Length: 220
Image (cartoon, rainbow, N blue to C red; front, side, top):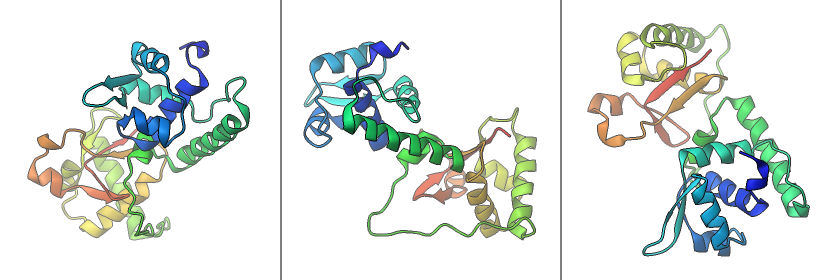
Protein backbone atom coordinates (compact mmCIF):
# COMPACT_ATOMS: atom_id res chain seq x y z
CA UNK A 1 0.00 0.00 0.00
CA UNK A 2 1.56 3.31 -1.02
CA UNK A 3 2.43 5.43 1.99
CA UNK A 4 0.77 8.49 0.42
CA UNK A 5 -2.59 6.83 0.98
CA UNK A 6 -2.29 7.10 4.75
CA UNK A 7 -1.84 10.31 6.69
CA UNK A 8 -0.38 10.53 10.19
CA UNK A 9 -3.93 10.76 11.54
CA UNK A 10 -4.88 7.61 9.59
CA UNK A 11 -1.92 5.78 11.09
CA UNK A 12 -2.69 6.98 14.60
CA UNK A 13 -6.24 5.67 14.26
CA UNK A 14 -4.96 2.24 13.21
CA UNK A 15 -2.32 2.13 15.94
CA UNK A 16 -4.81 3.15 18.64
CA UNK A 17 -7.29 0.48 17.53
CA UNK A 18 -4.45 -2.07 17.54
CA UNK A 19 -3.16 -1.15 21.00
CA UNK A 20 -6.67 -1.14 22.50
CA UNK A 21 -7.44 -4.39 20.61
CA UNK A 22 -11.16 -3.64 20.57
CA UNK A 23 -13.73 -1.65 18.60
CA UNK A 24 -13.68 1.97 19.77
CA UNK A 25 -16.30 4.71 19.60
CA UNK A 26 -15.32 7.66 17.46
CA UNK A 27 -15.81 9.84 20.55
CA UNK A 28 -13.04 7.88 22.34
CA UNK A 29 -10.59 8.43 19.49
CA UNK A 30 -11.35 12.15 19.46
CA UNK A 31 -11.82 12.98 23.13
CA UNK A 32 -9.60 10.47 24.94
CA UNK A 33 -6.87 9.63 22.42
CA UNK A 34 -6.88 13.23 21.15
CA UNK A 35 -6.86 12.20 17.47
CA UNK A 36 -8.23 14.78 15.05
CA UNK A 37 -10.42 12.22 13.32
CA UNK A 38 -12.56 13.63 10.51
CA UNK A 39 -15.13 11.88 8.29
CA UNK A 40 -12.62 11.72 5.42
CA UNK A 41 -10.18 9.73 7.57
CA UNK A 42 -12.91 7.28 8.49
CA UNK A 43 -14.11 6.95 4.90
CA UNK A 44 -10.58 6.48 3.54
CA UNK A 45 -9.68 3.72 6.00
CA UNK A 46 -13.01 2.01 5.39
CA UNK A 47 -12.59 2.25 1.60
CA UNK A 48 -9.13 0.66 1.92
CA UNK A 49 -10.63 -2.24 3.85
CA UNK A 50 -8.65 -1.44 7.00
CA UNK A 51 -11.55 -0.71 9.33
CA UNK A 52 -15.21 -1.51 9.72
CA UNK A 53 -17.58 1.25 10.81
CA UNK A 54 -20.84 0.85 12.70
CA UNK A 55 -22.90 4.03 12.70
CA UNK A 56 -25.88 3.16 14.93
CA UNK A 57 -26.56 3.90 17.71
CA UNK A 58 -23.12 5.57 17.67
CA UNK A 59 -20.13 5.56 15.34
CA UNK A 60 -17.74 2.74 16.28
CA UNK A 61 -14.53 1.81 14.46
CA UNK A 62 -12.94 -1.67 14.42
CA UNK A 63 -9.89 -3.09 12.66
CA UNK A 64 -10.34 -5.67 9.92
CA UNK A 65 -7.74 -8.43 9.45
CA UNK A 66 -6.10 -6.23 6.82
CA UNK A 67 -6.20 -3.37 9.30
CA UNK A 68 -4.38 -5.44 11.91
CA UNK A 69 -1.68 -6.26 9.36
CA UNK A 70 -1.34 -2.63 8.31
CA UNK A 71 -1.24 -1.38 11.90
CA UNK A 72 1.44 -3.95 12.73
CA UNK A 73 3.57 -2.52 9.90
CA UNK A 74 3.76 0.73 11.89
CA UNK A 75 5.78 -1.08 14.56
CA UNK A 76 9.36 -0.25 13.66
CA UNK A 77 8.38 1.92 10.68
CA UNK A 78 9.93 5.29 9.95
CA UNK A 79 7.76 8.23 11.05
CA UNK A 80 5.98 9.97 8.17
CA UNK A 81 7.21 13.36 7.02
CA UNK A 82 6.07 16.30 9.13
CA UNK A 83 5.17 13.93 11.98
CA UNK A 84 6.24 16.57 14.47
CA UNK A 85 7.57 16.09 17.99
CA UNK A 86 4.69 13.96 19.24
CA UNK A 87 4.68 11.85 16.08
CA UNK A 88 8.41 11.28 16.25
CA UNK A 89 8.16 10.22 19.88
CA UNK A 90 5.29 7.87 18.99
CA UNK A 91 7.44 6.07 16.45
CA UNK A 92 10.32 5.73 18.92
CA UNK A 93 7.88 3.94 21.24
CA UNK A 94 6.52 1.81 18.38
CA UNK A 95 10.06 0.78 17.43
CA UNK A 96 10.65 -0.35 21.02
CA UNK A 97 7.45 -2.42 20.87
CA UNK A 98 8.64 -4.06 17.65
CA UNK A 99 11.96 -5.03 19.27
CA UNK A 100 10.12 -6.31 22.35
CA UNK A 101 7.83 -8.44 20.18
CA UNK A 102 10.76 -9.81 18.18
CA UNK A 103 12.70 -10.61 21.35
CA UNK A 104 9.81 -12.36 23.11
CA UNK A 105 8.47 -14.19 20.07
CA UNK A 106 4.98 -12.99 20.98
CA UNK A 107 2.66 -12.08 18.12
CA UNK A 108 1.54 -8.46 18.07
CA UNK A 109 -2.15 -9.38 18.23
CA UNK A 110 -1.49 -11.68 21.22
CA UNK A 111 0.39 -8.92 23.02
CA UNK A 112 -2.27 -6.26 22.59
CA UNK A 113 -5.16 -8.61 23.30
CA UNK A 114 -3.61 -9.64 26.60
CA UNK A 115 -5.86 -8.77 29.53
CA UNK A 116 -3.96 -7.30 32.49
CA UNK A 117 -5.51 -6.82 35.92
CA UNK A 118 -4.44 -3.39 37.16
CA UNK A 119 -4.51 -4.54 40.79
CA UNK A 120 -2.58 -7.73 40.35
CA UNK A 121 0.87 -8.38 38.92
CA UNK A 122 1.68 -12.04 38.46
CA UNK A 123 5.35 -12.89 38.10
CA UNK A 124 6.06 -15.37 35.30
CA UNK A 125 7.48 -18.75 36.26
CA UNK A 126 11.29 -18.90 36.26
CA UNK A 127 12.88 -19.96 33.00
CA UNK A 128 13.99 -23.56 33.25
CA UNK A 129 17.61 -24.47 32.69
CA UNK A 130 18.52 -26.82 29.85
CA UNK A 131 19.06 -29.67 32.31
CA UNK A 132 15.74 -29.30 34.15
CA UNK A 133 12.66 -31.55 33.80
CA UNK A 134 10.82 -28.60 32.22
CA UNK A 135 13.41 -28.51 29.44
CA UNK A 136 12.73 -32.20 28.79
CA UNK A 137 9.01 -31.40 28.69
CA UNK A 138 9.65 -28.71 26.08
CA UNK A 139 11.42 -31.29 23.92
CA UNK A 140 8.59 -33.77 24.34
CA UNK A 141 5.99 -31.15 23.41
CA UNK A 142 7.95 -30.14 20.32
CA UNK A 143 8.23 -33.77 19.24
CA UNK A 144 4.54 -34.44 19.82
CA UNK A 145 3.58 -31.26 17.98
CA UNK A 146 5.54 -32.23 14.87
CA UNK A 147 3.90 -35.66 14.90
CA UNK A 148 0.42 -34.12 15.06
CA UNK A 149 0.84 -31.11 12.76
CA UNK A 150 0.48 -31.60 9.01
CA UNK A 151 3.33 -29.14 8.55
CA UNK A 152 5.34 -26.71 10.73
CA UNK A 153 3.31 -23.62 11.58
CA UNK A 154 -0.08 -25.37 11.55
CA UNK A 155 -2.15 -24.92 14.69
CA UNK A 156 -2.70 -27.96 16.93
CA UNK A 157 -5.18 -28.15 19.80
CA UNK A 158 -3.54 -28.34 23.22
CA UNK A 159 -6.08 -31.05 24.07
CA UNK A 160 -4.54 -33.26 21.36
CA UNK A 161 -1.04 -32.54 22.65
CA UNK A 162 -2.06 -33.42 26.20
CA UNK A 163 -3.60 -36.68 24.97
CA UNK A 164 -0.38 -37.52 23.14
CA UNK A 165 1.64 -36.82 26.30
CA UNK A 166 -0.78 -38.18 28.87
CA UNK A 167 2.08 -39.36 31.12
CA UNK A 168 3.47 -35.82 31.43
CA UNK A 169 2.20 -34.16 34.65
CA UNK A 170 0.09 -31.08 34.00
CA UNK A 171 2.32 -28.68 36.03
CA UNK A 172 5.35 -29.69 33.93
CA UNK A 173 3.31 -29.49 30.73
CA UNK A 174 2.04 -25.99 31.55
CA UNK A 175 5.48 -24.75 32.64
CA UNK A 176 6.93 -26.03 29.36
CA UNK A 177 4.21 -24.22 27.38
CA UNK A 178 5.05 -20.97 29.18
CA UNK A 179 8.71 -21.50 28.29
CA UNK A 180 7.85 -22.28 24.67
CA UNK A 181 5.70 -19.16 24.45
CA UNK A 182 8.84 -17.05 24.91
CA UNK A 183 10.60 -18.67 21.97
CA UNK A 184 10.64 -17.27 18.46
CA UNK A 185 8.44 -19.17 16.06
CA UNK A 186 6.05 -20.45 18.74
CA UNK A 187 2.52 -19.05 18.92
CA UNK A 188 0.01 -19.94 21.62
CA UNK A 189 -3.42 -18.47 20.86
CA UNK A 190 -7.01 -18.69 22.07
CA UNK A 191 -9.69 -20.26 19.92
CA UNK A 192 -11.28 -17.31 18.14
CA UNK A 193 -14.72 -18.94 18.15
CA UNK A 194 -15.22 -19.99 21.75
CA UNK A 195 -18.59 -21.57 20.95
CA UNK A 196 -16.99 -24.45 19.02
CA UNK A 197 -14.77 -25.55 21.91
CA UNK A 198 -15.50 -28.95 23.41
CA UNK A 199 -15.33 -29.35 27.20
CA UNK A 200 -12.03 -31.24 27.01
CA UNK A 201 -10.57 -28.52 24.79
CA UNK A 202 -11.54 -25.85 27.32
CA UNK A 203 -10.06 -27.93 30.12
CA UNK A 204 -6.81 -28.39 28.21
CA UNK A 205 -6.17 -24.65 27.86
CA UNK A 206 -3.13 -23.03 29.46
CA UNK A 207 -3.52 -19.56 30.97
CA UNK A 208 -0.84 -17.07 29.92
CA UNK A 209 -1.22 -13.36 30.56
CA UNK A 210 -4.70 -13.89 32.08
CA UNK A 211 -5.89 -15.39 28.79
CA UNK A 212 -6.71 -19.03 28.05
CA UNK A 213 -4.75 -20.43 25.09
CA UNK A 214 -6.19 -23.42 23.24
CA UNK A 215 -3.91 -23.85 20.22
CA UNK A 216 -0.20 -23.87 19.50
CA UNK A 217 1.79 -23.46 16.29
CA UNK A 218 5.53 -24.08 16.04
CA UNK A 219 7.18 -22.91 12.86
CA UNK A 220 10.78 -23.73 13.79
